[in-house]
Length: 344
Image (tube, rainbow, N blue to C red; front, top):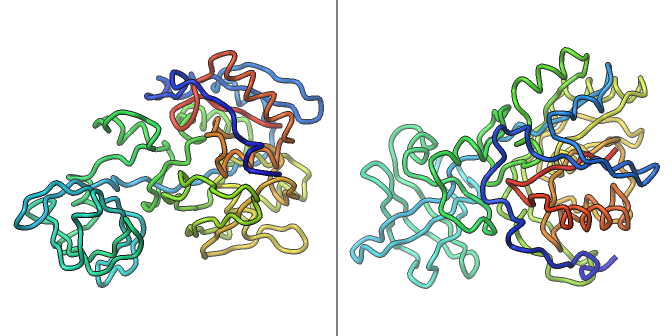
């Protein structure tokens, strides 16, 4: 398949700027791969598509306020520093993106508060820098006080205080993501409790979603695209839960493309999930043989995105495009704060 196969127009009015309230009141499009049928439901109804003994796999990464606004030493120029990846905890080194990049050079110091500043120590790309932070105490507590929620670039508004709650799953646990696993934003605690009472096994893996999730594919030949590496963990307890469900021939529903990529990055030749702590740059696009996932919960993604390509590999390209056209016609809300689909 080619990049142009995933290009289609989307009205800006369909891009959700705010989430549904409550979370599980969002629309849910249910796509049945075996028949091609499409249902229109509400996310709160998703429990109806689970049976006792089924397994639900979530990504429990936690978003941190990665967008910092500081002032440059001496000139007092306003500088945005977007945190990408911690390089060294001991040395307080981070990979970041700066804006405006032309004003940020090696040796520059940027102040964010009385307790937090950084010094630029290297140029990595045209906008990329390596910086060393200077602070006392807990770094994430400090940036929580001064940082902004890293909303996706297609949400054309400033981050608000409530976004720190909205742009976070209710089961988020481990800090490290600069983008939310958005399919999971629809779950509420009561809905999770309802699934557990039904006998569904709920387990978690970890993949810290990076800024690369928004990086556009720029090559027509998909085999030439290189994904950014992201850290992931598959705990032994999750392996046991998933492998038991496989052995019992129960359904394994995976919430989010990031979760799928983590699972598919740690599978044995016998198609069993195995524990891991590593980095993955796995790029899933049609055709692909999924080893773990039976059903997929996801959102409606940007045209030409790697997320959409994974969905096409799982769903069938023609059926996926049929679903997207239906969603646009029926005015589903799209992207991170938008509505969801369940592909069975």
